[in-house]
Image 1 (cartoon, helix red, strand yellow):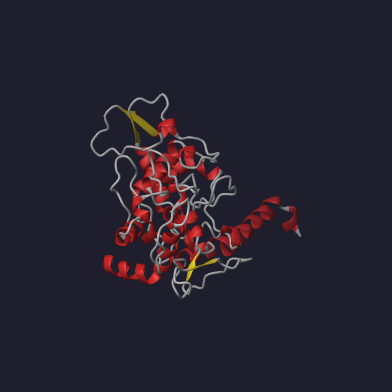
Image 2 (cartoon, helix red, strand yellow):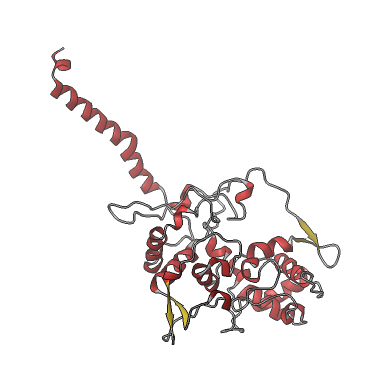
Length: 331
């Protein structure tokens, strides 16, 4: 029984046993997981610019208000097409030896989740306007302005991108607003946040308490189309606004718009699927919303019908067949 009376032997043995259990229970399984755990096919590592943007995201405290996790409840479906899985974070790495912050899942949703923001809001112009002053694109936003990430130049240098914001948000500013290197890196990181589609071999969890999807009747009275109003709210309203009046000086209105009410359906579908830059520099460039969101002909038809029959517009409805013929042509 001398063992229990010898504190050196007792504590040395306890320490050795603790280290042994740590290796068996924690370290070895973790190392094995690193070998087995592979990123999803189609996922991409952060570029150097995006990595710097992630550091700025942390530095500016964005993680305090924004999460990066889609829970498997119906209310989170607006943030991603499926609930998040552990494999979604397989590419994350420590910032450095002293700083982990590899996975910025967050705990608060004062602002919306950013898991899929690169697909939900792929417009660079919108992201810059939102950073400069969130109220310029989302009037009810409580997010602080990050004006210090921008420069005011009398004459922008070649390659500079001017930030279009309404005149009411330019009070006291003499010159052109251009993003700094930090702003460009931060936006690059935000646009890299895209939910990767799961391989067919990996079943996706369903959202709990899932509600029945709304359906709208197509123009023929027989074709069932998705809810065009919901598609607009998810993919278009942040720029063109729920009122269809856009943001003066930043994003054009759809109310009484010539393209929306016009007869050139091919141009209309092409803008939705491939984006548009024909209104620069008055308005920002529109990204390829339809392609980024993997729109089907039924989605595009429902969106067009919503825009043509809302805000006082009285345009001709279209069918999914008409849209499909154009989408096949412009591929």
